[in-house]
Length: 423
Image (cartoon, rainbow, N blue to C red; front, side, top):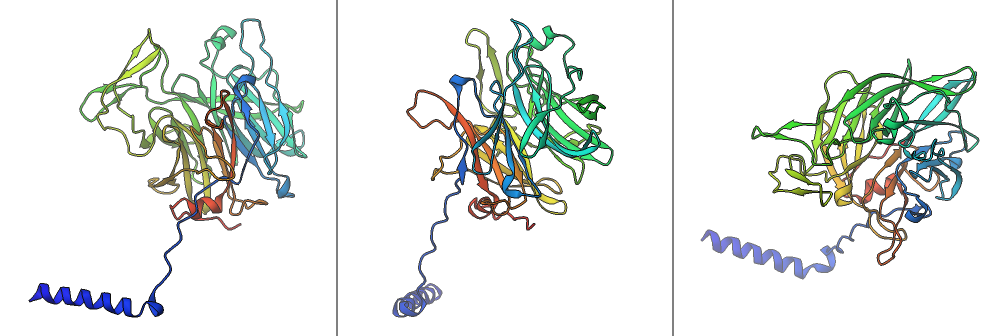
């Protein structure tokens, strides 16, 4: 009797709905709009040695419409764009010091605000120079960058030009400040090292640095089955860090070790680093084939995480209120952006991708930066991401560029129900 009763009830419900469709029927929910970029910067072409890498967003507090995106392009130097994505300045890298030496190569860039220099408070753009193993430091004034790097600041990791030519030099970079000073964290190419530099103003109006300490992240790991694992690469090269970000509210640095995962540690590089998340490929066995100049991988034992596909690249922070906000990581291997809570244990929120629209989607994304200040055309803040494959399908040449997204679009269309800062 019970099954018959259930069946009758169900049929009755259907009849009631059909009989009163005019009164109760609701239109189907519209499909969510895809998340697309608002605009993009001009293409940078491989044939010109121009390779978009990492952006930093400078907000003009007096005239927000004059805010800038300062971006590195490796051997092509630094490009400065306005909020329409148009180039407003180009800074060439330093020339090679010798015939057999490499020229300058700007890799990552970040900002310092209200730095006391020559009796004034100025904003600085600070870039890591892989070709020179040093920093390029620029004052931002009236929408233009002017270099103020101290000529005698010295190399960061190398002891000679010969060592610089070995390319174990300055690579990734982020900056942070506290009441005692302004600092840069700089990682080392092909090594696990990250150095803490204190930026120093000189009487002649230039800015140099002093190395405070260096942290060496692990290069070898013990797996759950007791085996030892290290990333597969050329002999003498290890899993480097590139993407970095500092939460100044808590004094926490997040370091993206490309083939390993995301670490967090005190921004002054004291204390023990701990892993927030590991790459899917963490623990993947591989053997380097010198003849083919590539790694031959075995079956993935499943020791890694579920989200980040190598390489782990740009890290940036979007703050909502107080100590709350999000840590975003470029998951280059699957063209996505992973989102973690900034507070607590950095729980994983979800991932999103960009779609084709008036502007094409992003692939193999590298650097990223976000601000939580609404700017003209970018409600809730601005997210700028690198597109590592900007070239339309079928083109012979290869190009890269940067995409601009409104944070409100990310919050509403990513499917992650993200918060928006109201400032």
